[in-house]
Image 1 (spheres, rainbow, N blue to C red):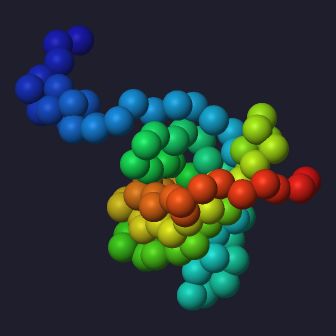
Image 2: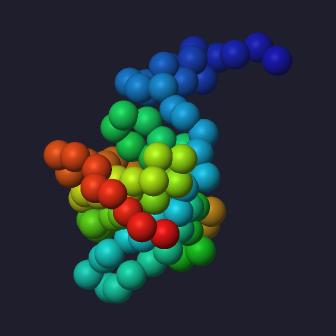
Length: 102
């Protein structure tokens, strides 16, 4: 299949490479708590699978469990796009991850 210029442009818009992960995430919103799973993460954002995704431009606080390191990442985020399967989010991490017990 021939790639079009449009496809190439969309692919190259990403500033940071993504890493596939399966990390649980807790989202705190003005409407309550939601649980999801981080499916990929990059320096600037993530894709979060969630049974009830948030709407674009919604903001939230998060805690992402990173079991391989025994830590959790915390911070604030904003939904960039959303569909029935999950959402692309921009993340602003707290200054340093904190230890987590689980």
